[in-house]
Image (tube, rainbow, N blue to C red; front, side, top):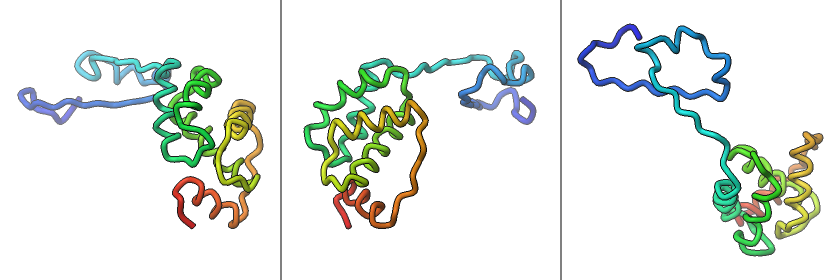
Length: 138
């Protein structure tokens, strides 16, 4: 890469989720010499990611009750997918005017996410309800 002196200690890191379309010029010797592939989390990794997101929500059961089951229902989901499922479960609970998020809300969210279902616009009242569910405010 141009602009770096030969004696400087410079490490350049880059990331992409589309390595198959990288320009070959980037992969020439002396450019990005090492490639590290990070796969989607396995079922145990998904469970740990779910625990992180579930800890922030008002649930009917403890987060550990849901995390194992949800990880089994979402093989191959990345962290962003898991975050979207949790957010969708919050919205489903809010639309139902439920104060706690249940297994049914998560199952509906997973089904909706896998099918790429329609996103409905939330009314302002539902948004404030969502924030109350997540943050305990409002």
